[in-house]
Amino acid sequence: MELKTYKKDSLEYEYQARSDVGQVRTNNEDSLIEAPDLGFFGVCDGLGGHAAGEVASGIASLTLNELVGKATGTPEEVLKNGIEEANRRILNDQEDSPEHSGMGTTVSSLWLMPENSGLGWIGHVGDSRIYLKRGDQFSQLTEDHSPVYRLYKQGLITKDQMHHHPQKNLLDRSLGVLPKIDVDVFPVSFAVEDVFLICSDGVTDTITDGELEQFLQTESLTEVADQLVLAANDNGGTDNITVVLVKILKV
Image 1 (cartoon, rainbow, N blue to C red):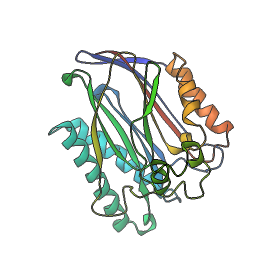
Image 2: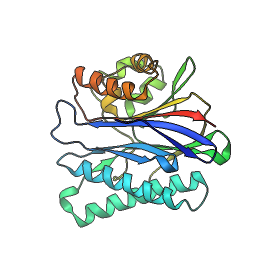
Image 3: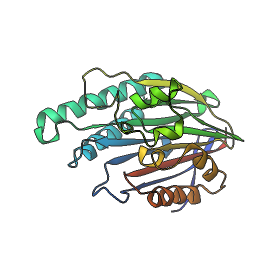
Image 4: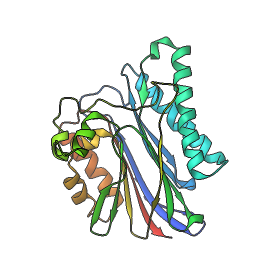
């Protein structure tokens, strides 16, 4: 896939995205958020099966792309309101289409803001993740909204042990469950050469953080994106696999 460079005022960045059905699922319930001209990227991982998860993630992706494109309000207001509106639309769809009952989705989104000189915003619900590679440092920026992640934060299990926990796929928060939703919205700084990785749990359930960090040592985003999908499939491909990579070229 051709790698393109995008400019937003003084900010320059490049990105790559992949979404793969994996080795077990019959359909892909993940949806990409791709608005590179706006500096807006993300992943929505649908829940519920029977194609309903695909519907929920698609509604979330389209809603956020729409509202960020209009951008009325501060970045944090736009992201919070956008995710809340996506939640309302998913709930309304379930009322209109009973066969979609029980569907939901996660959302993890990144919005780069050049006018704030190296400051972006993250909007997040669920257990899709956003990581940042900065120099020799690699860190997870979002927190999974799950019982198993709470065990990890409490020091009761390790990050790697989360992969094998029998309740690893349970969520405390997702879109499409309750009328009121608690949204994580927070700022994140970025600098030249930073690389953001946004991915669904089809990646993080099969590839450890240490392995992700090693993959990101490769300079080419195209190669990294392809390698992550290949590795997730080689490790079982037990879920849909979606990755977005964004590299900052100029601030």
